[in-house]
Length: 184
Image (cartoon, rainbow, N blue to C red):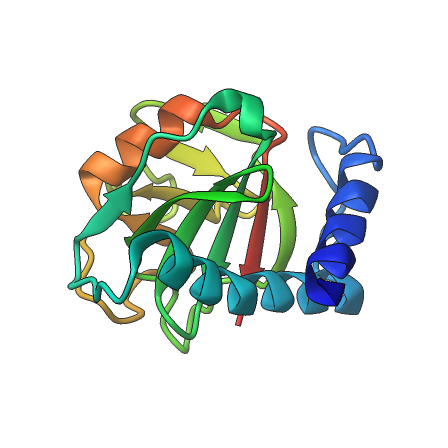
């Protein structure tokens, strides 16, 4: 219960920030934001077991269950160490998916980030016009959630790659401003 209360307080303080469209560099990579994101990632594993049992996901797989939008606002939680993404509505886990995050030389940043921009089809300006379907940008440097190759290990240039069908479903329920907690 203490962990849920701490996460709720962190979440409410992030939502109360009135997040700007273009945050200053590192604004959401503070030690407190990183700690709250890592706490959320650890809690999500327990919630996964409660919601879906002992299912083990292989690269490219996801689980999704129907949870009413009345359950609360959406938030996304990313666990870099487990290579998993979680979607919540309020305190209820809706979905879990495998991911592929940034490699050691191009790590995915940790902290709490609002979705800044969404485009159903985007092409990377930095990386040879690479396709980024269902792109949801998290920072001013190009880090985003998007559909892409999902080998089950960190393999991106810092983005969080999602299985294509999961990326499409996630894109359909999030909004600009939805918080994304990226923890270790």
